Image 1 (cartoon, rainbow, N blue to C red):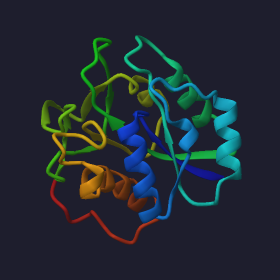
Image 2 (tube, helix red, strand yellow):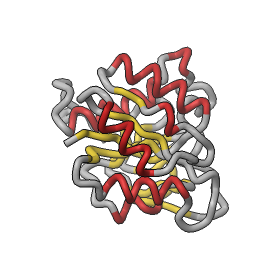
Image 3 (cartoon, rainbow, N blue to C red):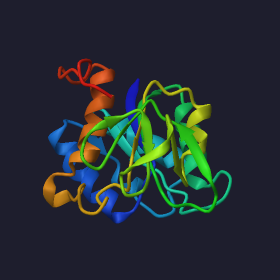
Amino acid sequence: MRKVIFITDGDLAAKKVLERLAGELNCRVIGASYGNPTTINAEELVRFILVAPDVPILVMFDDCGMRDYGPGENAMRYLANHPEIEVIGAVAVASQTHAKEWTHVDVSIDRFGQRTAYGVDKEGLPDLEIGRINGDTVSVLDQLNLPCVVGVGDIGKMARFDDVKRGAPVTRKALEYILERSGYLERSFENEDI
């Protein structure tokens, strides 16, 4: 089974961040999944995943604000149900969307790198609701029964707190949390306060 982490953002900033972090965290990123919105079809994504090295694989999805299920969410559903793929978690990215989509999150990482039980907004600031995040490519996540969903603000941005030149610390912590939960990292988050 190939281990996959979903990232619900596919713009250029997210691509740059994920390419950097993939190397540092012994993961691979499917660069072809980059796009705003997602343009690659799900069957082609599966082919890329199955020939990638056997390490956790980061895959980007983006609906570009489309209402209901857009191409990114349809591709996520396809991959999550594929017999050779195990989705070990998702980084749910907040956005200011008119579609009013949301999903439950297990935890969020705010722009300061702190874990919080609250959702976060696009700027990475804690939101008003516990365990929930608003975005444009996230509503399908609730249907997929994923083991770990981490909410973050806009990858590579958040008022430059997550800038790739700073090492994208917010996105890094989100990925580390998923990797630790799935047994890929020895670092433990168990004693950290939420």
